[in-house]
Length: 350
Ligand SMILES: NC(=O)c1ccc[n+]([C@@H]2O[C@H](COP(=O)([O-])OP(=O)(O)OC[C@H]3O[C@@H](n4cnc5c(N)ncnc54)[C@H](OP(=O)(O)O)[C@@H]3O)[C@@H](O)[C@H]2O)c1
Image 1 (tube, rainbow, N blue to C red):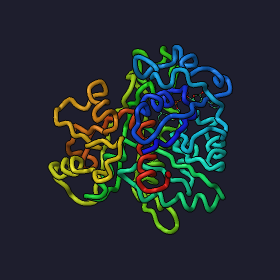
Image 2: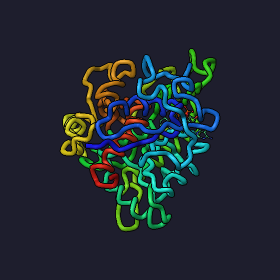
Image 3: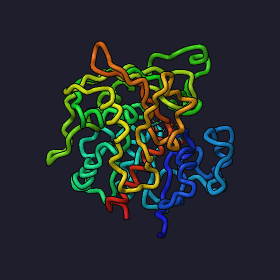
Image 4: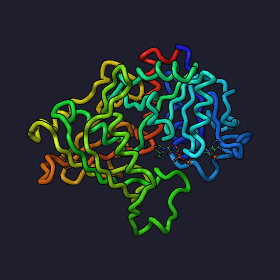
């Protein structure tokens, strides 16, 4: 099979370099273009990444000598993965979609647009139905599909089987989010060493609103938000990669702890599709009293799983648990790649 040429917008950032790493030897996609800000354009990727490459020992061989381009829709590819700074992502992604590119984006800018799918392949694949509406309404040849915020995605992967099995009424979540989630150089060292930073701008709002769209029903009028009360408190902690979230839920039906564990462990709606980046177990349940932990569990299933543990009853709501997930793999670049794989499997990408 001839590989599909793809580009990475924002290839020099924390998420961009994850794309560069994860797309090395992808069976369907071949990185043909790397793009970043006008200041980086023209440099060889390896040169631009000096002191900034953080995800493995070395920049992959294929990318080293590639010349960075500007983020203009003249790139030689049909799909672009966007890891652009949210300050600039909105109009750049629109220009690409207008020019006929498929845009698989990590940025927040278009996530809540009513005609843009906010997608987790295991949770709401039917929301891809919005693509037709988007192209019709905007007169675009291409389109934009987004993945959720890095905390939302892991929590919603865990909520979906509970909602399907027992109904879901209320969710309370407290996040402990890794430093790589703030980009590079990100949070100042003196703000985070020996400290917890109890504020991440707009994060709580994103977790609350994106959850309702993701769990919403797709119909002829678009996506109807789920009727669930969600309360989020978000904190930055001194961990390099991996967001940990303490979640309490109120369910509509009673459920035993065994049934809850079964719902998590049996959740794998993509099993038949065999997408290249699909984890074998989207939700891994750890039974030990002291797991999941970011250092030990973030790379399970190559960073594509949400790892759940400490499942127990909650004296205020019904159940509580801890969910952990890699924020730049399943929480960002890996999510956008899996979204593109689903689009290809559904015939939206040629
Ligand atoms: N980090 C995470 O865990 C995470 C998770 C989910 C979603 N996200 C989202 O993903 C996006 C990228 O996050 P990040 O953490 O990777 O940020 P980052 O490290 O700050 O990288 C930002 C990227 O945007 C590029 N850029 C900046 N200004 C530009 C311009 N005017 N034109 C074109 N490119 C420009 C930068 O290029 P230069 O290097 O040339 O300046 C860089 O490649 C953000 O929207 C973020 O909210 C991040």
